[in-house]
Structures are given as structure tokens and as C-alpha cells.
Image 1 (cartoon, rainbow, N blue to C red):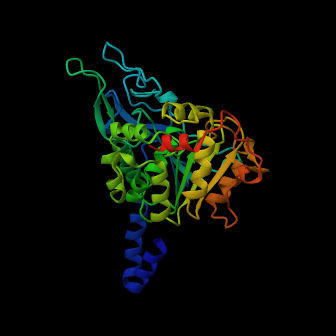
Image 2 (image 1 turned 45 degrees about the horizontal axis):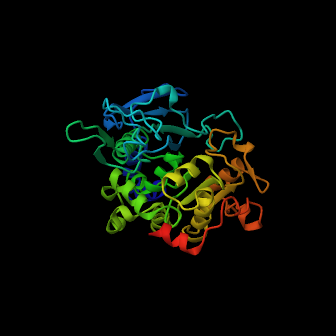
Image 3 (image 1 turned 90 degrees about the vertical axis):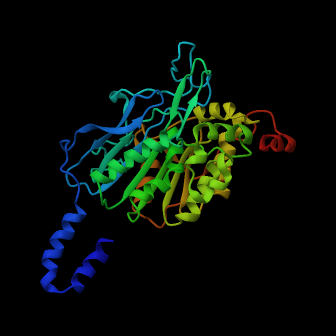
Length: 387
């Protein structure tokens, strides 16, 4: 984009070139003067953004000297969709249940994964400014609906506003960092599901910049690996029927994360996308049980293999490892290995547009855990799960 603009300015002739170039250069860097000292992480309030209990939400920014790239990180923290899973009590409060925060998270809890620029193995090096978006809505950044988890006489209202709050955070991010050289959009756990769901949102604010999307431990739950009706009920509770891309609105709450993977691959075939997962992710296995999977101990394995085999486009790749690990971006990048490749090296190849970048999948070589982790399921049970 910048190169195209320079060519256009030259066509206007030498009389205009100097003056126009000065104006254009100002436009490239037309961001407000940083209100946060370089190297420090500062809290930025987001008027209108609300946690589930109505408390105000925020984001965190870190400016780095000379940084021209942008790293946007969505935090994780479970999810909830009922009085039980949201931990709602008779006194009208909800303590979270299977969601870590439903009220304004303490700033001390705000984290951004790979954020240490002094670590030479860190793919997110000092060339990146950082934006961290806390998670306190219980909806994996997909929702835009107020739900009463109490009764008409004793209402308990929770705001599943994750999608709405992210819109506000991205608008503020674009105001502060209007034209980065590249954008890395990453999330962990519920935030990983959020990045899969919100590629369209990022593209609205950054339509031209190279975009790299990394889902860390965001099992893309889809039919038949979880109960279709239960999944649809949860997504409708959150209000995803109001936030889906227009092309998927006809599916309503029947859309799942497999549909989002396929949609992103077809609409944005040149974007690089990475799914990081262990085959038996311990936390996502628990959510598979809550989502009604008929084979919960194998649901994560089957889902991520299905995703890579049938829902990925040519620039969507997987980095799968054996074991139970949930979330990799709080581990040293080179401490995670699969088939002799470190996660740090693999991610750097992704971000550097290495043409040799490809999936790392032990299951293709018989090196992942076998299927015999629980009782074998019949074809009829798979059909039942799909209903």
C-alpha cells in the first residue's frame, strides 16, 4: 500500500512530490502521541466496554521504540452459558463457575503470552507493539447479548458482550497504531476461539496489512464431536446469531467453529493461520464433556485432526503435540517441540513467510496417542452426537 502511494505521488510531478510526501508520511504515522512510556505497559479504558457483570473493561498497550509491527492478544479464561456454569447464586451474583472472570479482571492478571523481547527464542520480538485484551464476558469473544440467569422477579443479568467489547478495543488499537507493517492476532484458550471467530473484525480495521492468526489451544469445537443442539443453544445464548459474518447469518446459532475455519480459509486464502494444540488438552477435554461429546476423552484429538484434514485452506497449518498441555504461549517457545521442531522456530517461519512452513502433525506418522483412551464408539453413537 505504501509503495503504491509513493508511485502515485511521483506521477504528480516534482513540484508536488516533496510537499505531498511530507503529508503522506504524516498520514502513515498519524497516531496520537503515545501516552505510555516506551517499554512500559499501560491500562487504557474503553468507554462502553463492559464485563459480564456490567463493570467497565479496558485494554493494555505496550509501545516499543522503533516497533513497526503489531501484536494483538486475546486472553483466555473459560466460558459459561447457564446459571450453573456461570456460578450464579441466590444473592444475585455470579462468581464465574467455568469462566475465570465475569467482572473487571485485576490488571495484575493481564498477560500477553510471548511478550519478553529479550528472549531470543520469542517470535514476538522487539519489533512489535503490544495490545492485550482482557476477557471477562464468558463468551469466547463471540457474543453481544444480555441474558437473565435469574427469574423475572429476581433477575440476574449477565452481559455476554465479548464481540462488542473487542470491536471497541480494535477501534482504539487502530487509532493508536494506524498502519503497522504486519499484524499478529493471537489468543489462548477462549481467546484462541475468539481469534478464529473475529478475523473479519480485524480485517475491518486493518484491511490491507499482512495478517497472521494464531489460535493457541482453541479446540474448534464442531459437530459431530460435540452435541450439535447443545452447541447451538450455547451460541444462541451468547448472541452469535447477531455477530456472525453476513455470509454465515443463514446458519444462525447452528454455525460452529468448523464453519468459521472454513469461512476464513475461503474468504482470506492468503492469510496464514496456525492452530496449536495437544491431542488430549486437559481443559478442552473438560469442555468437550460439558458440550455433550459422546467420546469426551477423544473429542479434542478427533476435532483437531478433522479440522486439519477437512477445514483448513492451504495457508492454515497445525502444530500438534502429544500430551495434555493446555496453552503454550506461557512456556519458553523453544521448550515446546514436536517431531524435532520447536514451536519458536515454527512460528518464526510462519511470521517470516517461509515457503517451507508446514503443519507438524505426529498423528500422520503414528506418533500420537492411540485411540483406545476410552470405550470404542459405534457409528450409531456418532450419529447421535450429530443430532
